[in-house]
Length: 345
Ligand code: TXA
Ligand code: MG
Image (cartoon, rainbow, N blue to C red; front, top):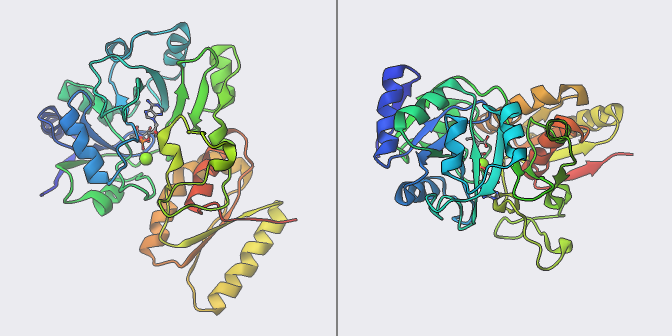
């Protein structure tokens, strides 16, 4: 299939919107990462997204809307909590998991009775949703398992020839995917951490927010299907966000994370760099200090992809302190490294 390249002009966005309205697939920028969009209410169109990405069909999609008022068409109730969150964080990188209305096909929700909804702030994304005249289901526009795309070129690298079009918009400023919050329960639960933190959510809601325990779990290794081993959380444990169980964000290179004081980490990284280079290996380094977590979020996926392009053999990364945005970056980093973490003492 020929993939059309669009600029982020009104005319091109209109053409792209028509493709989505007719059941096609178009990748587009958002403030978090690039998304691969399809008409969320058209099960056949959404089915094509799973195929193009090679995505497991039990992994539900986020439905993107251009107006807060469009939320009520998709979910059975808009609670007081949801009103507060929309007021504070929309448009922006917060996704709310709500109770699904029947108009949303089960393919879109991976068979679940809930639907994840967000209103992005990127103006190209908003224009595309408006022009297409429908809510847009969009996972990150990468091949399943690869790092999320934060530039249009990343999308070209993964999906050219597999989708109808790509809109070349701005590079993504947030750099990691939206915070996913389950608001179907009295105490909301963070299913995926993002740039909007637990503390910010609690402040806006005036109550406690929980973190899904799958996010705190560090399996020793992955099984052959690429699923993290979650058995030690109990035989029946199922992560609430199905996407959390899959191997994710993996660079082609081996990746090792070093955890400890700045001094110990920097020393260990420099020693291993010398050691590996002596063996003729190409080494990449990802080193941010804990006060640079927002920058780390913005650049992390792009660095993984750049190192892959350079043919790097091993990526040595410094762990961030796991609070605020640091917790969200670490959520991606440990998965990229397949939980390969060296603790320094
Ligand atoms: O920032 C973002 O959220 C980007 C941009 C394109 O908006 N999208 C994105 O989509 O990251 P995706 O498909 O890569 O990740 C969606 C996550 C997955 O972990 C999925 O399991 C979870 O949200 N999710 C979606 N619907 C859900 C639902 N009904 N219940 C629980 N988790 C859900
Ligand atoms: Mg994704």
